[in-house]
Image 1: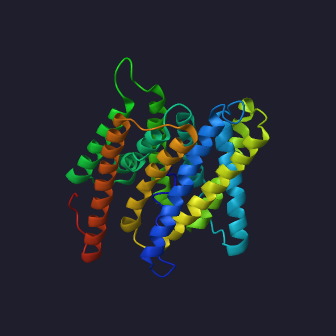
Image 2: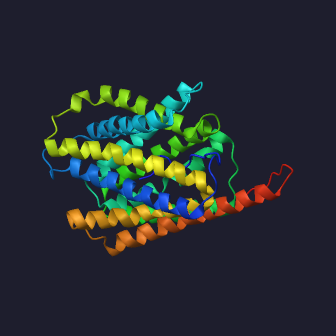
Image 3: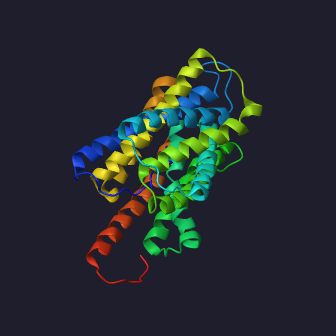
Length: 314
C-alpha cells in the first residue's frame, strides 16, 4: 500500500539500478504484508476484530519505534521542520491508512490494493489547484483509464455494488492529498526526517483519537500489530533507498508488484481468489497508473534536455 510513493530524494548514493529494483520489490513485499496484517486484525481471525483506528495507531507507533532504531544508527540531524506541513501530511495519511485498513476487512486485498493505485492520479488532479501544475491530454487520459478500472471494481449494480470499495476509494483520495504535502516537504527536508516526524505525529494523534475504540488485543494481535508497524518502517526504508539509487521513473513501475503479493497473501491465508471482474479492474487501473508513470518519465527526460524555461502542457 503506498503512503511514501512521491518522495523525491537527492542522489546521495551511487546509482545502482539493480539494487534499486531489488529494494523496491522488497518494499512491495512489506507493503502487501501490512494490508494482510490489517485484514487479520480487522476480522475475527485472531480474536475480536480491532477498530481500524486502533490498527492505524499500532501502525504508527511501532513504525516509529522501528525508524527510531534506524535513526539511532544513522544519527540524522533534525533541521527546522515545517510542523504545519507535517501535521497536514500526517492527518491525510492517517485518514488514508485507516480507510484502507477498514476496506481490506470487507473486500479482497487485490481489489483494495488496486484501488489504492489511484492515489497518484488523485495527487495529479489535486496538484492543479494546490501546486499550480498544468496537466495535458496524456495525463488526463491516464486518469480517465484508471478511474474506469475503479468503477469496474466498485461493481455498480443493485446486487454486486461493493460499499466497502468506497472506503478504498476514499483512502486513495486522502493519500492523494497526502502526496501534495509530501511534495512540498520533499523540497525542504531530508527523507528520514520526514518519516520520523510523520510517524511521531501519527503516534501522538492516533493515541488520542482511538481511545473510545480501544479493546485489549490478544497476544496474537499484539504480535501482528508489532509486525505491521515494523513492516511499514521496513517498506519506507527500502523505498527511500531504492529512490536514492535510481530515477523515480525507473523504479516506480515495480511498485505495482504490490498487487501481485497482496493477491498471493490473500489466497494463501484467506483462500480468496480474484474473479474476472477484479482482474479486469486491476489491470485497467494499473494500465492507467503505468501510463501516468511513463508520461512523468518522458517529462523528466525532456526537462533534463531543456536549459531554458518552457510552458507547454504535457
